[in-house]
Amino acid sequence: FLSNNLIPLTGKLFLLTELKSAVFDDFTKEEEWKVMLLDDYTTKLLSLCCKMTDLLAEGVTVVENVYKTREPVPHMKAIYLITPTKKSVDGLIDDFINKSSSRYKAAYVYFTDFCPDSLFNKIKASCAKSIKKCKEINISFFPYESQVFTLNIPDAFYRCYSPTLDKTKEKDAVLQIMAEQIVTLCATLDENPGVRYKSGPSDRASKLAQLVEKSLENYYKTDERSQIKAKTHSQLIIIDRGFDPVSTVLHELTFQAMAYDLLPIENDTYKFKTEGSGGKEKEAILEEDDDLWVKMRHKHIADVIEYVFLTCGISFQLSISALSQLMKRMPLYRKEISKQVVHLSIAEDCMSKFKSNIERLCKAEQDLALGTDAEGEKVKDSMRVLLPVLLNKSHDSSDKIRAILLYIFSTNGTTQENLDKLIQNVHIESDSDMIRNWKYLDVPFVAQQHKYIRRDRSKEETFQLSRWTPVIKDVMEDAIENKLDSKDWPYCSRCPPTWNGSGAVSARQKPRASQREERRSSARLIVFVIGGVTYSETRCAYQVSEAYTSCEVVIGSTHILTPRKLLEDVKSLSKPKDVVWMKDE
Image (cartoon, one colour):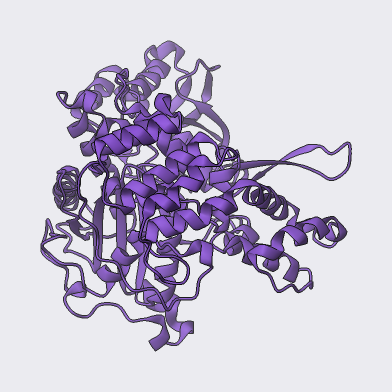
């Protein structure tokens, strides 16, 4: 099951190991073929971990959806990997409701997390004799990348922030489910972390932190393998999305963040056409099986194109200004770089967008975000930086809204009158809620905002159009170095000993060969962002892990966000919406 084509890294390795030990090892002595039943959630979960060939190796010959009507196979046993929800449980019961016409020989049931007594009793009353095994395996998160996870609940954004749900129990219910999912991550990583949060105007982060701490206590009290497990050398930090609004709307020029922002990539699938007049449309999945993608995704777009050519033995000294000329020469090297055609095509598409519009935006955005220009001089009048963007007819309304938001964030708010004028003059009345609704994320547009004290990065080498560093990177580094103020970042639990003064050691002070071995026995920092995490923020987890050898950083959220999708989500906050449970009830 743990075949070579699977990713032998943090999240996925633990997830695969857990699935194998919790599910498939129950059948190691059996040689008969089995059917596997999944619901929508576990279908996505399993697709991240393995391919059909891996399941075949474990004796699974057919995979079906538990919700759908299926042909009976009464001579085969069935493995049910499902969420403990009414819809999934009803699908299970329906397969065995009539003893004389059961769909399968027997059922082996594995729930992704805790099964409520009401559902468990329903199963017992309906089909207990057909069930040979029933287990809760506590895997209710998605390992998106080696150091990135999601809870796969983008609707949580609306439920957490929409004022239309203020008088309902929906927000508390969502936080409870998020807490339970986060605990399954901690359990899978075999961590019982110290839980802390960023205090702020809202109590979302503190509520979630307290729920996670309570759920961790309950889990480790009842877990058979590790009775009342002590706190491990790890921290879990919970942050609300409004903590750093700048990183959510800024145009990024690193490969992954830029591609997902500018190109129509859906479900991590990039579509492109092959060369020639009769070129066919092809698809490529951007995933960790692709070694070249993993090597390049966090590089600046200029470095990406240089890297692609260097892998072909072609050397170029690149700058942003030289890239457009280089792109024109690319057809000359198509044969030599056929293996890199997917990534080259992504880079071409990104650069096409960049040269047509984005390049003009980037300087203004960076100046607004940082409050200083490329030479380090303070921006005296942010409106003079903003106006050329708003007056440029080649920029679409989405880009202008992003620029206005950066102006507001950089000036610690604006007046109601000034905001109304901006919206009217740019003719974005229909989308004005993309700006106004940030108040529901505790980012008021007419008041002062408390800002995190930033690290001095003026001496770090960077591209002029990529000077901004996500605030979360400062938080990660401060947490590892034990510099977070306990008043602003209180614990819900006793501080683990690792974080009391020992901190983590910079990579510059240690032999690099020891990094992997050292991390296995050292601390882990888990950062969770309520309401979505950006690709630029996920990149920080890798960068900080690389810089500090004795700590591995894992970052997660309810979902991965892109700027355009976020603006649509923010716009929808003030609209009434049918209440949809995050899992099928």
